[in-house]
Length: 258
Image 1: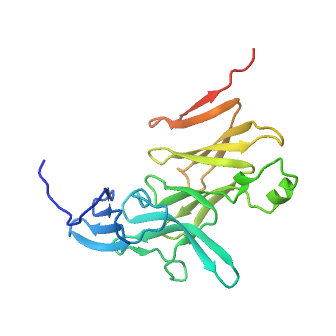
Image 2 (image 1 turned 90 degrees about the horizontal axis):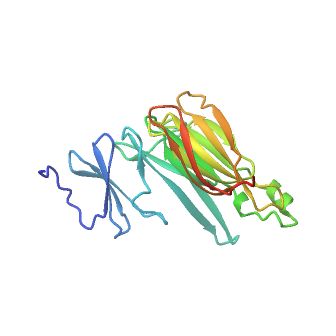
Image 3 (image 1 turned 120 degrees about the vertical axis):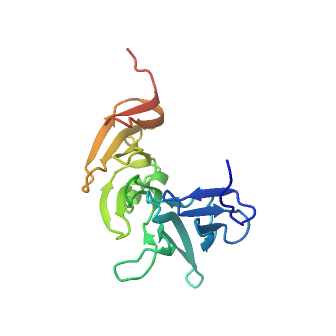
């Protein structure tokens, strides 16, 4: 094995090559700008990016073709006069080779605002982003006398899909009483499976589970719900069959009385 290129950068702890092999992002935990995007073939720095808080070498993710790189962000803006703090959340998507943010319809290059965003990922083989949103329902206590009132003031958890670079929201789906929405992407981008952990009946400590399956082969993204009728202690994972349209579920369940 013979080295063909040496990137002249010190204290690099992680390297993330674009799928097209034209660009590379390096990460160095030292300094105010730990992220550096290089033109790999020309060995030129395209852009450096600052540390945004609670970020690491996995923060930025390439699209399937290397035309875009994106990250989830959260910014708190303090208003000292009103003694309030405004939170802005969403996804920042940069276009290569310019490393400028993708533009809105009015031409302004800004991040995509998604309130309450929790998880996100690129869909393999498509410039499509899947994301989930939570607005505080997981922090509610159903034994609180004001539970129903507090719940009514919150928006329900959501799963959405955004097309890049036009920033169009392709679909959104709402899930009542969800405590967690855990993503499991098919390796070829054919399906997205989501383990939906839901609050049980009021006063019950048991949790309910369902599997939400999204068909990513069509633009309309059809959705199917599979009820998981087991007394689950813990849900370990969902596994896709690569060659066939099948999935497997792994959970630890309580044994039912015979």
